Image (cartoon, rainbow, N blue to C red; front, top):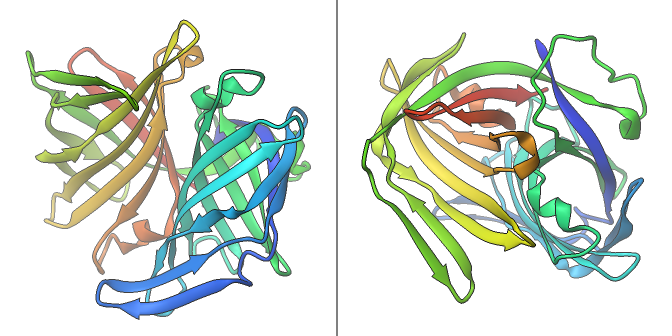
Length: 304
């Protein structure tokens, strides 16, 4: 049951034509893999319209042996009506938690300078549904505003919604190692930022608590300049361990949008062994973080 609402802004509706019609599915030595690609598609929003390019959109995700739990790991390229190319890195979940034909995704955008450049600074999530042979996603920007317990506006049309329901999972606080080195590489393909600042930390919520383990966090950040503004995308994997000894792999994409007043926005999926916390495998989560002076603190919510 959702207990809060995440502030969002509708960006566009994305339709993927015949997404499940061209699929390759096999059980390999490392589990089940399902490869899918749409036959083109469309994006339609108040400020952006265009098409999903055929042959430039593919999901490389994996799945449980019975196919009821899927990890979406996709790349999508779209072209706006005025000719601008937009690359979308996509991750997400389809599971029992969301029901048949339903999914939740997160997205990071890469766009050249110009009329759509602000997408580079926007962390986004998508609410997906199958419509016949097509799959439709309502894509929303996370605004960075605090979550609230105001009444849900789920009854409104997707383009008019300003909140998405969610459930509080936990708050995590990293321990910062004073004097730790933060390495930067300004290479010909862009900037990379490697942090060694985390020395473990704690997380705690209503259904689980524990630590995240020092030395098991991989966080190469991608950096660049957009005009006179520095932008940052990150793609992090970190290993948690509950107080009763269960390991949890937490993987998240995120941005540090300049307009969000020091707030880091993330979108998270989990991998957990069978047992008391395996319900985490089914959810797509979002998080809001802030630097606290002695470490970063994130509050994490599961999308309903």
